[in-house]
Image (cartoon, rainbow, N blue to C red):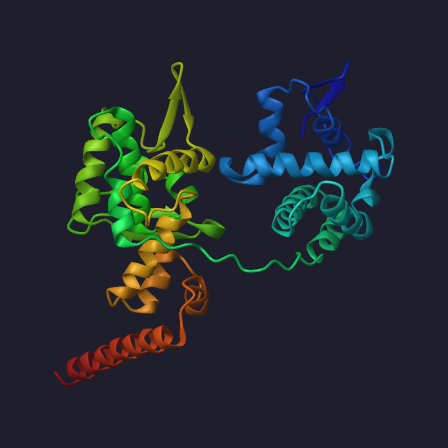
Length: 357
């Protein structure tokens, strides 16, 4: 990694972890709060953090830990070493975030996860720091109460989708984005990282290849309305189809193209929700992207789709996760398991028939 602080500003230079000061360069970089940091240096530090949607969280988290070390422990860059990332300090950091920063339990878990990722990055490049990473890895997350997602009725979804003016470029983009969020139950970050190469429409079964949590790929089927909408959208926003690695959804400001963020999408949704609520009270004013995913999963269940199929489409690893996610009642659970059992019996009967022939 290449980072140096000169005259209070972060600059690019060669840095390699050493046993004496393994993280000094990074500390010097992130402690330059409010100072101008070059894009190249910043991208180097946060390349370890995965997708662009996560970089902001990682930056805030590691900066916050640096602030804790300086304010509470009096640790300056000159004295920074691996011991500064011991279990005791990290536990005290979590307490400090709750008491001094008024962070919620969920926020503390996000910050802890980011710090773990940072230490893993260092440990992957120098095995002598694996013990430091393992200490952080074994610190338990704060127990948080389960937040229930407020669902969307079919009437509410219809009302929201009717708001964007599809005759304008922005309105048509927003409509396409919302239609895909609902029709496929895709996660918003999965949608915003979709590339042209992930869309397959010139075939008998149109679909898109989604890269979900843990970099796992799964195909999501596209129905006729989303397919027609996507074709129009690509023709308007990607007329040449030259760059297959181009993001499908992007924002443009003063001639500069940039990825859309989940925060911007949620702001856009709240704007449309405010208008839709006037004609349909089912539309929540505090609308966010995840509600489309939750709503579609619930509607699939109402329409008789078996729980295994829903679980697969959502990208869940097990059916129990899907049942908890949908907050399924005992009656709904019995119905879901019944449809799953019926499907299994049909498949078994089909296998017996094929074996006899």
